[in-house]
Image 1 (cartoon, rainbow, N blue to C red):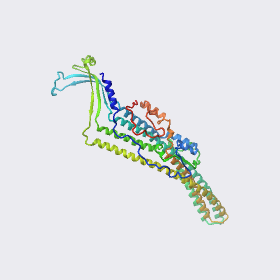
Image 2: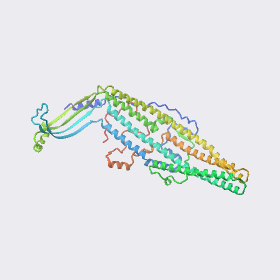
Image 3: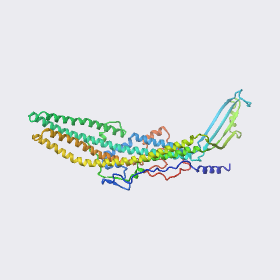
Image 4: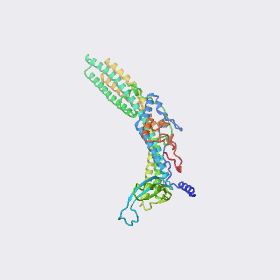
Length: 535
């Protein structure tokens, strides 16, 4: 008994022994030193990462700001992602709990036995008797090879991956809300300018009809005018249908039933958000820290790396300490007559216990364990390649957004002058037609060109804002919106707490969370000897 403290100390020292399996290292990912579009004067490449936390504020649109905050509070897929964090945290709690004695059972039994007369080697004087037992059994598999520590490491990486998945959904959500809002404003302007052209063409048709009535022109002129008028009018119902569809999409993003959003979006007509003429971007290497989906891919690989150690530990013996204490007694006779004998259960003669090591080693497994290690290693390499590919895709998305943003700016500059000239052409053509200087073909062509140029200009202006949104999404901006906020709303926390005991799980986890998506811990960072359980 006096050697027990020494035995416990020895066990704890053994627990801090070797840990099989590889220590995770951030995979090498090739990134460019500068953006391909950074030579453009409208792109300001900075060594210090700019603040993208509320990138939508650059549009100076209070309605857009309000929409994004509403979507953050009410979007349902984002809430699902928050609940997955709770799920991952509970799984981490399971992994931590497995580091402690895996079996802790208290039991009691009252069993009546009737032994067969034909049983072989029956040496009992009484075949009928009661057996009383009361005890407590434990079994603790010692973590000699780090199997449980690797499991905690994997579960911790998986939980952090669930957080970066939440952040990635939030980045996509803010960008999608902004994109759909820009689409709504673009369609509103298209409807407005189409109605403006309908008014112009209606006046031209009336002039052509008067000219035909007075015999100045043939019937061809009013018929051509009417054809163009009806064609332009036919565009309005489709644009209105597209506008309603965009409103329905925005409703779902806001967590609302599909419907009219006039009260939220504002007037039926609105201006496309004005994007700044310049954009500040960091360096391509910043994507490795800022992009939640890139970090998600990295953390997936980290979790898988730890799984190699989990299965590799099966190559070695499992060593456990097993013990049990209790009382046991058997008495013959009826239960009522033996009720008095229950007192004997707690006598010193009924005391029983066992304690000792238990060693099990799966020695002949015909290569199953080694091949399982190979399976886990192949999966790790797959995730490493996936991480490298995600870095390339992230860089491509930034470059595509910048190219689209810069190209749309140049297009708008040309189209603005073109629309001015087209408007003047329509005015001159109508004046000359009334004076009989030109035929109606000149009026028809100029009005058709005006309709097309105005529509192209509006869509190009919308493309500037849309491509800028894509740039900020590609740069990984917007996830900071959740900093300091719970992953699950207070209302849903209450609903879940009424149903299940969640303890302190709605508080921020005690494990280190990515605050600004920092670099992972240094290579070879060890898990604590034993993590404290979360009850």
